[in-house]
Image (cartoon, rainbow, N blue to C red):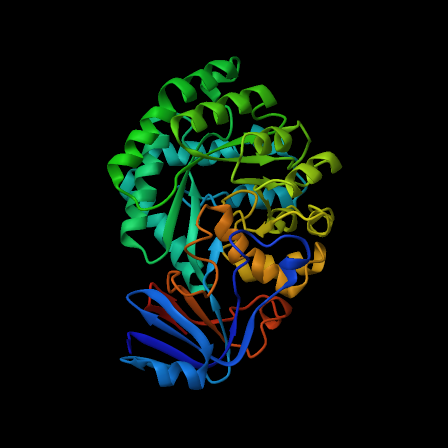
Length: 421
């Protein structure tokens, strides 16, 4: 049988759970084929097994000897804000000097600084700036990424960001999953009447975003997200946005419990959210609800690291309770300017007590389920997209053990080599 690509003499790592994300003890489970091989036909994984069997079964136009190195699925980045204009470098220095959030806002910083810069940028400018960020992510092994709007906070800029995401998906090797997030913060124009902004989101912005998505013909799910947090959107405002989005046909997600618990996790899980993200302040009751649900809990340790915090979401407790946990950088200009999922894995192992296998699964198969694509990506199983990483290591644990560098030697996207160090 002919194959487009065979990677052999590899330690092949990473099989899927049975139809869903890995939960509880299963999160530490990895399928490892020593002296294994992966065959690719038509951009899909055709077979995984011992090298001798695969090489006998498949005649490859392109055969790669992995030299005994680890071969695994492409990383899936399930929570990012990488489309924006400008930077927050001045804010970075203010934080180091001890300024708190209110002082930074008074100095013109914070999310509204990025909003001003993003409103002023064209679609082409947003695409050019964001492409460089995606290039970094690709070099570090990300083959699929969720990308949110949320730095426009008005109809036209939010739709402009959505168009930039569509353009980047068409032009870049990384596949993008769009998330519409106008409920990221209350814009200055509605500071005295945030309910009126929620009205605008529900009445005008969500229907227009759905129309833009349908016109784009993007082969991806689309989600709506909301930041349910003190100083952003309260529980009832958040519920209204998500209920409206769900009724329109969007998938739904929610930023919850990052700083305070407003009951957002309970509400979003009850609505059938695909993921609830951050979870630093989630309650025991909500952990039990999450464990019993099909919702994925996404933790973002690079945010806490960037804040210089000693407190992190208790991912160990979530896993022990039977929750499906995924891992993300939350790559954004303010709270997590980090493109590296391997660094997020390293932090999660040290500060949130994930085992290396749990971190690996959290950044691959569970992250894939967190963006609604668990049946298509996130593991090396026959029929899935041939998104494959060759790591510069012979033991998967080294991916999280050694930090600060890049463990990825080569990236295959849809069966085609797109990056090689």
